[in-house]
Length: 130
Image 1 (tube, rainbow, N blue to C red):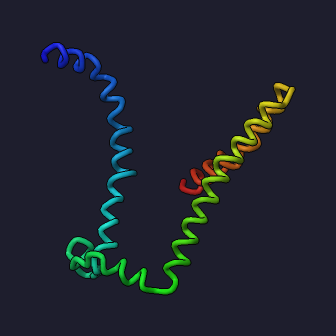
Image 2 (cartoon, rainbow, N blue to C red):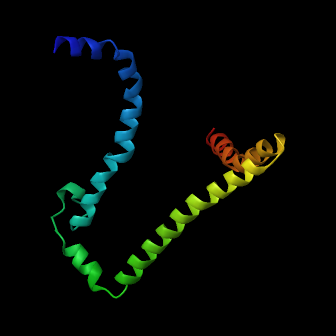
Image 3 (cartoon, rainbow, N blue to C red):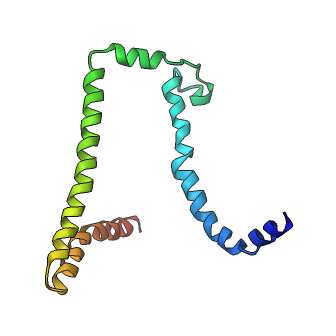
């Protein structure tokens, strides 16, 4: 037991380096899950989310009793399927096409041209804040 503790304590710098990433992961992925409570409550804005009465599954019964629930569910599934397919196939096709180019300069130029709008939007957003 003491040997394991000594082994883990010898890597304390690595644990300190992982700590900011772990905090960001918790903040981005787990803290927003408290918003799921809204689906199960009758939200009263004066009492807040935690002070509102519990509704259970009655909100879902109301949603699926409407005629539009099938359309909403179908659209959500279809949009997700299309986005998943496009986000897998288009980058793979572009990577294969760039790999087939004989020149060493052209793939780098094309990659830069593809990522330029992304970096430009970051640059513009940064300068609009200041």
